Image (cartoon, rainbow, N blue to C red):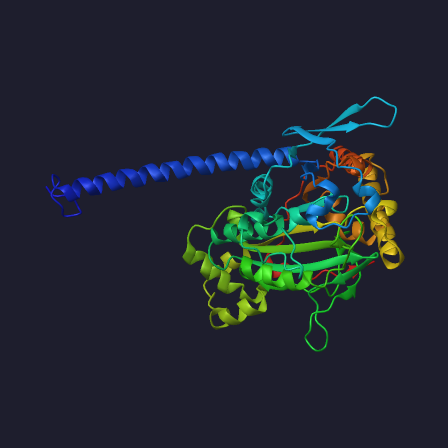
Length: 474
């Protein structure tokens, strides 16, 4: 009897077919194993993050006199050759040699969830960030922020190398890309594994400059990009919100990068003695990922693509305008009781990914700033101090947390206050002359690790037909 394929069981082609079927089964079994392992790792990571802020520390390479990075350094300071005093002794420990003239050197150690030595690449840094992103489509908020002294490598870590024109993504070697472009690529990769049309992404880009919020994606009356001042308020639900903030829908990582690049060209930068391209503002890039899921299978994938496409059409009124227009001809096909019941059970799952490149703390005497730059430095240091105060209040479980002492902390209230998985990326210089600033950053990271915020919450939004707009109140 011939097999269903019609081939002679003893033929070469039949044997080849059996081999291919065996290989296919082996691949399928391997996929199941890998998915199980991935789920276990994801669960473990979620448990580690529950109630705590995760802190990583990156030590940038030693740059003699800091001239290798294009920095401006005074003649007096060039006479003091750079000395390395901060090291990564292992993947979780930073060792700092503290010494004063006439005193013996004292070694201090700091423990974090992950420590990167000066030789570790952007790939290594993002490998530890990527697992956080897998929970976005399940409705968990994620915030990743870089903290450290100016010139310590925050913008390189978050964005990548900077060109003179500030086209930070215009680089040939993708291995140099930072967390922001890589995270976006990963988000769209995760979305591509979902049923088509079941998720969409909106982007906003703001900077906090001199304690004012500016919308970097806003356009003036002529359609030209211009940072427009916005304000932050607290909604009735106790969440922070920026009314009238520009949100752009993007459908690919390249579209996102093009959009953000235009916003970055408006970001305020001035040279100092420490950093030739010092960022004078805090940059916050936010991706809002909305996923439509069935109420019966919340947190899991739909059974098949056909079902997901039908459900997507039925709620096309909730999609961004460009997606709604393409689906308008089929938005009213749900007519049977079964279809209406499926529509009623649908839910929106929203999650927010905030990517924050904080302006660097500065010692005025070292940076040599005057005039406008001195005023900028004052606002930068005060906002970073406010961030430390907020973390201190949460760590000490005070009844009042001073979020409103700064526009930065008010804007980041939901992320810092416990509604997101928060990763702080400390960036420090190993140089002796930056020892005071590095110790301050390491102290900030140590305090952040002590914060107990309670269980991280999933953003489970109500049934689509019952969603009501939020009214901001201050």
